[in-house]
Image 1 (cartoon, rainbow, N blue to C red):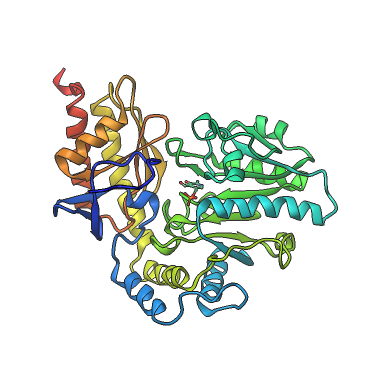
Image 2: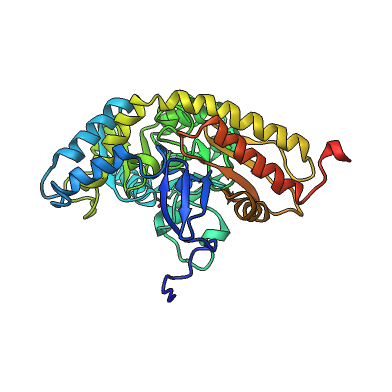
Length: 398
Ligand SMILES: Cc1ncc(COP(=O)(O)O)c(C=O)c1O
């Protein structure tokens, strides 16, 4: 069959045709247990009937009317997110990178509107990932993503993750915002230390810089509470979310306080599809179903199961794995050289029909749908163990 798709993704040789709960099915009818969840997107699993119904109903009512007019789904989802986060204002866009672009632009314009025109710098962390548009990429200090795309926008600086003293030295009165992932996802699932985020809050307040949490991967219930800042007990000025917000439909959002919201005035920023009725209706259904199904409690229970399984496997195969990291249902299991996480991913897919994913720094990443069950996690752990066994002799057998 012809394939004119641009070769910019390293896709596995599998064509997915449908999904159901925690399973995906390919064009040959093979069923796969999905431990990736669309990369932390499908919180309620695939083809959730409540989401499908909300999409269908909205598609039969209104798909697009532009941002020249308000509409009920966007207003209701904004109200719902504001209520749950205790932020005041919500800007909708279409992806995570766009949400971060909005936050970067807001930070600079906020300073500008306050007459603080020299405050231009956006500070971010080494190892972070904020997206692939040019602004978000400039905040992502990783050669792998930046190489060959220069010149990138200026005014970006970087500081080591989880290093309070370095942060103290980096935040000065030229910094418009410090953007940080409460759990770094792409670089191999590395949680921030609570004290680091607390110090960031204090330093940003002291220097009148905005504190932005990029919760695109770790938010929306992935680590337990709906918002990651609620887990850490540190309140930023702005948060960015996307991925799981509409359980798979493209949407991103920036949530901000009333005070900071004055940075953007009518005409300052926008996007044609931002806050379209269909993804907003799906997002609203997600919030409702999340409450009805006790999703947070399932994340807490299944997180304990997942991490105990991963710890056991790391202990059993000390030449293959280091100790697992992460929170909730976002876990990383670092793979030791000379082994490659990609080999384990392929082994599990081909032999056990379980889908895993390799994140940065040779780490196995686990981000299953938040509805995952104990039985499904034990199938996944068996597949991981078998894949590790294919590489190494376990400690007990040595
Ligand atoms: C923390 C974080 N920020 C931003 C992004 C970019 O989101 P998107 O791919 O929707 O542009 C991602 C995507 O993986 C992410 O994990």
